[in-house]
Image 1 (spheres, helix red, strand yellow):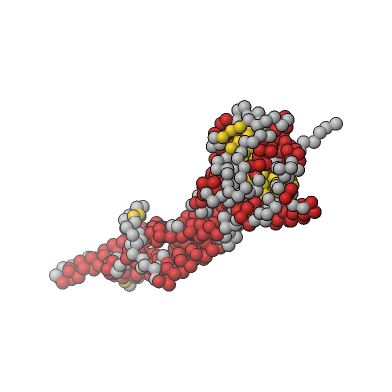
Image 2 (tube, one colour; image 1 turned 120 degrees about the vertical axis):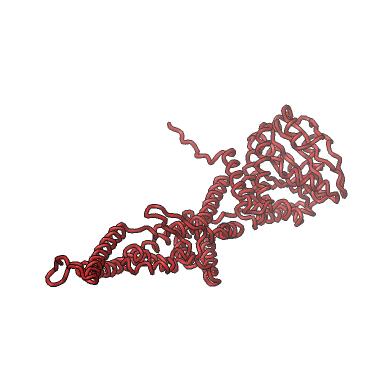
Length: 548
């Protein structure tokens, strides 16, 4: 017959690693004391695992007069602890060890100097280290601090209550309720039941059960006992013997500590040991902000003066086309007009193949309205990304959206300058038309010179050479008039082509500028937000693994 193995959860080692990972990811995002507490839990767990796991450290904790020291003596079978009634008599914790070989390093770590080998009470307690703690309500601060320290370290907590103080808010609010996640390593003893009438014992136990259920400790064992008469001690010994025999209390305690620390990381505003599920991030990291890329790009484009740059590209293209392809007789006048792109210091074509950027652009600074639009777009990105988060993580995401806002102006300006360099490239046809214009101009000059020579000869009454004609028009006149007419016509056609080319280039530059500015917005705003969301996703996954 094939046996089915029970599926086990993640190991304690993997959960501790996940807790440390979550603490590291929460650094700078969650309160420092919360992160420090989680790291402290992981550190304590690492130390406890390295010490004797064959011993179970059980601590008797209780208030003044609860009879905890009497119960300690009764379980040890010897008068090891001094017993008092109205004032605290236990100033430092002391230990009773059954089969304590190898427990020295563990007790050193717990800082327990007083160690006793109790009278033999049978083999069931082999491996038990029973501590008698000072009173948690002692008038001495050092006593209370000692209790608080050891309550965080021991494997098994045995809370000793008495009929008069079992409902005391001090023990419930300060200790029992915060340890709701430690049900598996908690035992409650209602001591001194011999002081109650027989019919009142059941009522007190039922009332105590109700209070513990309200504290979140449903299922925690309750034992009614009397150290003086011995009532209930056999049940308590059996319960302790079972826990010691399992050799699991230490790991159950550490597991509960890890879960509690993970819960506190998940929701620092909740009680330290309350169960709180971390809220998920916005699905896929950055998914919530993807739709805000366009509004952000729109705002950055307006602030960067993209419409002004696009208009300058269109006009600049026409300006340079006229200079390159215009009629040589008149195009020199165009050079007195400034190049729109040069005025913006965006880019200058030094040759047909070489481009340079002239420092920072002279695009007018963004107006107050445009700056407000950019700030609004950045804030909208942060708010959208943080919409599924709360508390410190939401604030961290919003801060991530603004983290590089101060660099945006220079980055966008560089993108505009770099992207606009292509707007100064000269089309090849400009050179061809320019050469054609000079050729036509040369023909016109040749015709003019020819006519000039003929005029001079006529002035000097020299005999005229034969004059060729085109029809009835002499060739010198044809060359002069035809060259001038051709030059003007070519210039006009070139202007029409430059007008159409300027519009095409402006549309292309507008598209390229928008793409470049979108990349800047993604790098300086969206990527930090996505990185923070990815960090929160990893944090959530680590918390889930730590709790498993």
